[in-house]
Length: 77
Image 1 (cartoon, rainbow, N blue to C red):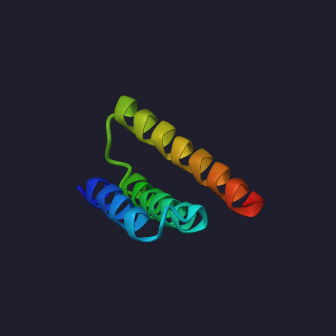
Image 2 (cartoon, rainbow, N blue to C red):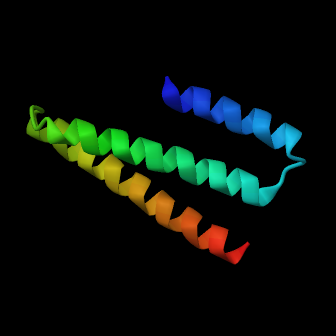
């Protein structure tokens, strides 16, 4: 749910910011960091089946990779 709201917010923001790439990158980075924190909190529970735990850890790693890419793109812009 939060992800959908965030994507809609980014779309709305891009309409009003004249597609300012820096603002869009900053918002995407903020959203990914928030998602990563949610995954870290969920994974602290350690009450998942091994297959679910593995899936959540893989998704967490993909979010971290996306953050790293966004940070590089932000530095280059």
